[in-house]
Image 1 (cartoon, rainbow, N blue to C red):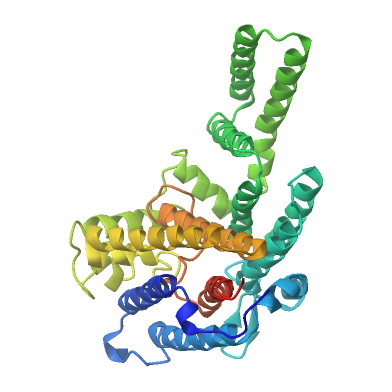
Image 2: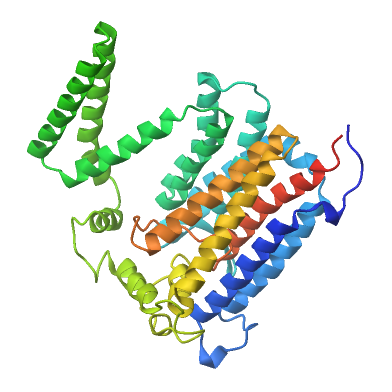
Length: 420
């Protein structure tokens, strides 16, 4: 049974407060990253900080619309919303504008919209709706969930936007909450290690030796297990799959774009290219390191002011924080995101609706992936794949999409108080 009515007092103001802090501090750093003395007004629409202020104002309108809409709408029409966004991904392949090698944008006059950003929330809705209708996660349900998760990812790969496509891997965390065995993550971790080894030892002779080492390890494991013929067959299957994976990594690597190959090789230390593929990360490290503990001060970052770091107001906005606000500012941003993610999990766990709970985990998973990958690539710990820092990076599409993603959940949580 439901009580009627909606009260702003039911909203989780902690989540809203963290959101506002991230958006505000993000805008301040966008202002610093692209600051122009000849256009110092914060409402100068010829500058990115002026445009971002407009996107922020529009986000508040979107929030009000979400609050007005009956929260049941997002559950009942989740598949329809998902289907619509799948159609937009197909349409952008046919009619979209190519930007930086990716055909991912619709151009409407001076405004460009990236559909891939919005599909994240619709995928979270569709996955939550599906999972809320089942009691146990079996193979059939895992396959269907996989289709929901990776159909948009496949379409985004066709747009030549691998970074955005990888985000959909994060939804596996929702399945884990539903009961997916933890061993799946162990398998994934082993595959990552094997992929790295296959790229480092990339000659045929080296890979044959690598498979020999794996065979020796499995033989040693069987010696300690001693569980008969069935154990032999399982370990043999593991060896065949592992060996096949090692020899196929090179073929998959060769299908990547040249700049993607270069970035991975730079990360693994296979190539030293500080003025080519590794330029962004090299300059980003310089910017962050030069900020030291307290930073150089607002608008005083030399790396920022002289445009040494490309994409500094978008994908590499975090290095502006490191340079101008130092370790204290960077740690503050990290703590804000940790607080956001922790609060999301806490709020998701208190939901009475399975749909709201799984959607909340979907929100947390997407934001966790974006935050971890973005900060990791800026620090040179992960490959540069070009995804924004949520609520922080410049861009209307990403800000609106993350705002919708978060506030649908906040609206669902407010409705929790109206359930008896």
